Amino acid sequence: MQELIEAIRVAVATDASTEQKATGVQACRTIVAALDTEPGRPIVLPGMTMPAPTSRVSVDQIIDLMIGRLTTIAAQRDAEPALPAAPATRGLRVPAALPRPSTKQLPKRASQNARKP
Image (cartoon, rainbow, N blue to C red; front, top):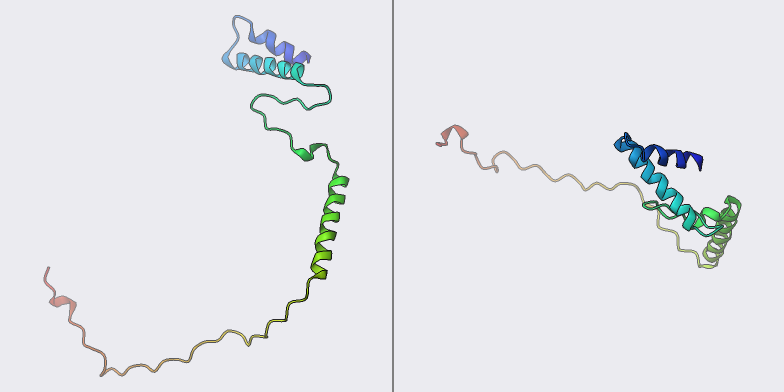
């Protein structure tokens, strides 16, 4: 708390820089937020994100909740009928090669040098 009050003292001095004034403003906002907060509730500063709903839950409680949920999912999955096994595949199938046309069947191309711009 003393650091915040000192930041405000520096900010209200006549020769305070812009950065010192900004620090003083933030210190004022922090003190106001602390005074407006109900006892036992987290301090929420302006522009600050809200605390997560799980911030008051211990890691052990979260793990217990996850285990309970996963146990329910596993029991439901065990109760469902098993899906029939997919037929085994023999690997990648490549179509047979098409016969190559003979050179007699190909049309002759016009020479590119014959073009005029």
